[in-house]
Image: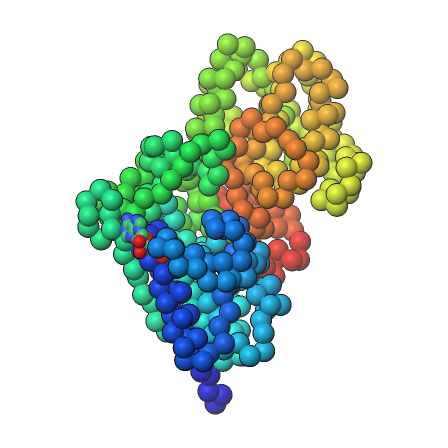
Length: 393
Ligand code: ADP
């Protein structure tokens, strides 16, 4: 049997708990032991600029900022024996496989630091799996700024108020900050109560697990969060159109179907619905002249009427941009866009979005109308597809 020296150490905890400090301390000690250490971090963390890991107490060390955990392998030097990764919760879950490779194929000591819980108090990214795989897990505490007790939670405040459970990850134009807090002082309006009913509402176990289990990496937005947010969107739309209540909802096939039906069920403003099916060429290839072909046009005339485009997801924005221009030429009274999901990171054409359900990272999602090779549109949640399943479609 092959003997591996590799080991995984996880340093976790809330914000300000000293994770970066501890990571840097272990790195310093490894260097004293004449180990060759390389430090990595996700490039989306611009806190102190690229190229360094900094702790809140001012310690710094050089780090390589990478976008995907896989690029870590490109930067890996032959003599390296210890790899340290900070803010690991932001990485794609493939980071677990990268760590396994470092330990099992290259016999490395891997030290990762990351937030175990997000601002809602829910497990963050690949942290649960990393913690389960680790030889050693240290959960650090900060000091609760309200009570002075040990803090285990990161309180997110948007414009001074506790952020709602469904608050998008990026709130444009808002002032936000984080505080360390103990469990009893952690406020998350809208957080679902623990469900203790036997055979009750099994939000995390939708109807046909066998159907999707092999393609699902993790649930990004569960059924309850989706439905709560759609109710909020419907309330907002109903109130915005209250003074001029004649709206045509234009669903873009096929992905928007689930969202459209749940949204319209909750609208209190009179409306009609119509659908369009379009396909685009050159989308995502920086080809601004890319064509959109209409496979099925609207049945109704929209001239002089309020139009609300209902989309499932906005990615590069090419297709939507063309659809907006096309509909604008028909001279509607107003034209707005409502999307359930927004992948801002992928945007190549500026688009004005009037209603956004959730801002999501650049991951391959499916379910709730979105397909994986045309299947799985019936899943009641938005899931992230396993890399091999996403690659096939
Ligand atoms: P993390 O990486 O876990 O966010 P850092 O290692 O960057 O934490 O910073 C920890 C340092 O933050 C502490 O040593 C302390 O100087 C400072 N700090 C600021 N606020 C708090 C707090 N509420 N509780 C504990 N430490 C705090």
